[in-house]
Image (cartoon, rainbow, N blue to C red):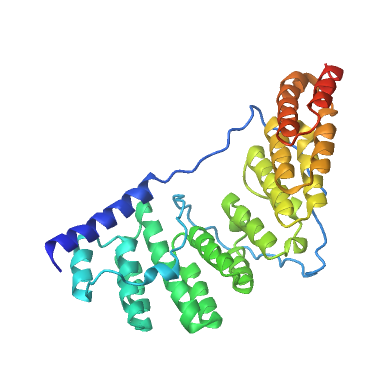
Length: 349
């Protein structure tokens, strides 16, 4: 490999590393004060599944790990090696970048391009052993390689081998929740709900992990995509989550939005009607947003009318000024009766 080629590869790797370091979590702004409430209307029966969630057995608590947001699993189609590099070339690059999952995955792609499947798997196994352990900033690099390895195993070795490998990796990895969530992302992409269910069963055998916020978020995502939400008491799942009331509020919103996304509109409205009893403006706006995205015009008008006629108490002026403005814009963009909105505003003064 020429010096110029090596510099190109190293520059690509450095850009990948810089991208990882610059990722941050965006947190939704919340209104001041915490509110406590219970929602008892989320235990919907799913005709497609009557199986009840199995109870988790308690295990010793795992050591708390630094929380890093893993990037999306690498697409197997991107593994194909495009540069004319040899294994010796990759080995030279890895001397300079031994902790780069990007280089390791490209190296594995070299073998995939030559249909040397076992060599590709062994390369990623070696990567996980080589990349630093115990350093929080490199956990994501090892997760990337593990998930890439699992993608290859699923494609070429089948579901049973995949499930065995996942069980082994989750048992031994120092951050099992982080690894599991990344694996779930991959499994949801390929719609392997059976393996996904087995993974959550293993993860939640430790009850503490079942109460972790990000695990609950990912579990709700799985339940709705697999249409198995009826097998779980969603309200109890959220109430048991170890997080503050704002985060629980957001989990209920996630459930409401999820119902709309699978065309269960009435169930979604029940959720939003419940969480909006506290008259939080951001929840009301979220409800309106999903209605405008998924519902018919007549239904959206009814929801606007229903919201505007609620008793907001001391928050009335603040909330109605925002809601009525959005109602007016809604009618205006759809050629509706903006005059009726103006009349409603006068009546509510």
